[in-house]
Length: 312
Image 1 (cartoon, rainbow, N blue to C red):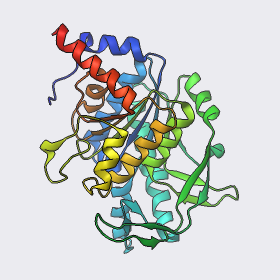
Image 2: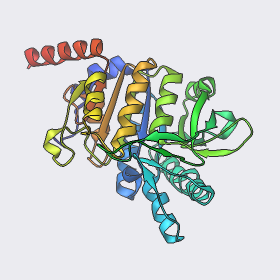
Image 3: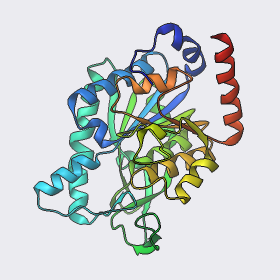
Image 4: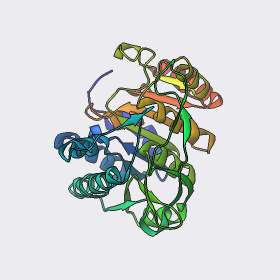
């Protein structure tokens, strides 16, 4: 794995392949916490955009919400990688994700010459959700399931793909905060991985790419050398059932599998803390994270790798 920049010659086959295609990129809050990381992501997104790839950017804001909650004396509770959201926590998420994080991202993209538009799932009914009822989840691998009420958290019912297509057709880049509303106008928090997966499915995107603070799916969560570079959906679900995938990585894997089953061709989980990680993952066969596909697509990918090896 290298931080060396991708050359134009390396990227050329992919530029031809992906021009005019739709990518949904989700950036986790940790990737956006520092200005230099945010600027690097904006540069990578701008590269895709200016080369003719239609990009929708969804962002998180968990660390920012946790930091503000702590400053306000509010407790943060996460269960199985998902935030429990009471009324006070929802106000914090609205301030951080719907305000600070979203606007900073739009401004960073503007600095790269991208006409970005800041949105949330609430705007124009982009996402209609319903409040999640109590569910049974295992708080940690090996623990018995317990009933958890996540509070003011939504589950997606519909995504207005035509609304996003309208923005994309005008050369605009939607930047979407993970806030949604139900049919009565009740604002709800929504896991950004889940939101990005639903949007990718609605747009029948070519790729869903989830950027996080870990390089990808690990066979051993304590050992970064155990990165899984490519796998099919069944393999990563088996890692989940074995307890190897846990915490915040669980909803990411679940989002990827849901996207594949909803018609997205390829999904990726990669470390957004690494310079040029996004362009490396998109414009090289080796990539730098974990690519998750359906089994039939993995066969096609193996043939691509073999073709590259012969050419080398």
